[in-house]
Image 1 (cartoon, one colour):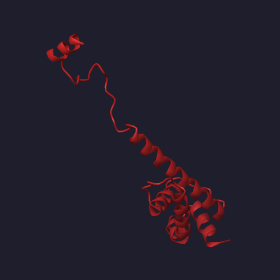
Image 2 (image 1 turned 90 degrees about the horizontal axis):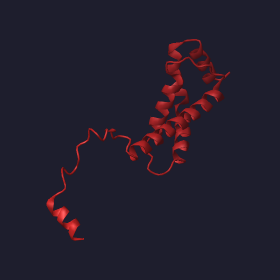
Image 3 (image 1 turned 60 degrees about the vertical axis):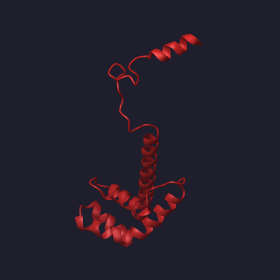
Image 4 (image 1 turned 180 degrees about the vertical axis):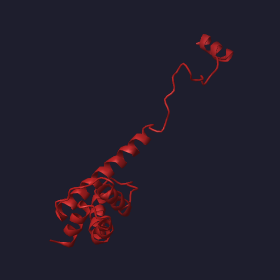
Length: 128
């Protein structure tokens, strides 16, 4: 049994200190995995590999009890967590790009941009 598997088993059994031991052991491998995931993203990705590792680790070892089958399963779950984080980030950017930050306003409550047609505009319309 590898050290990582032993620590994952301890986490499953509720050992709070085991989660603190896990990150230093798996950090470099998670960092490489995150760098590979980010390199496949389109240009303009603002999320850094370090941030992706930390976010994925929080999701993996967070409040919910996990049933880790071992080292391989942990890294597969980490890859999936990173993929979901990147997808969520892309969706958030797309939403903001397409007006996601704007508020909907009922047209009956909206103030018109022009209060009333000017006489000059009406005269121009009649001249054509």
